[in-house]
Image (cartoon, rainbow, N blue to C red):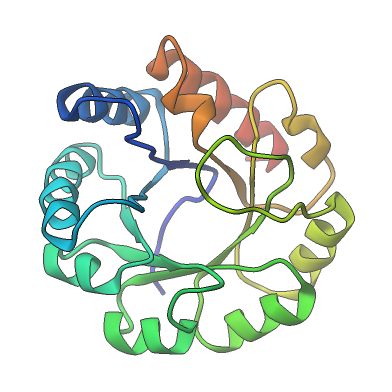
Length: 211
């Protein structure tokens, strides 16, 4: 089984940052306790994506945090990342699993119980479910209710993470739901102190997941 800790899943957004500032913020987040890291780049060319992914991977390795590449199995394989995450419009989970092999992490987006079961059956290791709240990222989102999130958690035996507009002031909506953790983007990327924010969020994640 591919091991990872999904409690505080940090998804990057390099928009508006120099590469130096971006990498600094990523490292600060890892120092603060982010347990899983996803590099998400919607605008970069393949060459640019690989170049940045290599640099981010080097940082992640120092903190022993798995790096998940958003969308692009080819980029994940090129830099030997720990995994890939596929969304609704990306390649099917089964295809990602075939490409990545049995020892890599494959995550998938799911917004309904049937969708979640299908992703699990195709080999997903975890699910990202949302958006719980509207987001400020460039990703198109459809809101998911707490009730649907709870139903998905009960329908599959793999970790389920909530995602979408979550921060320290609103994650209480997840209390009592069997999530394995939650994903944050802006809550860390745009924080004045990314390390301190990650520390706060990890503490909340531990309480929510009873760990």
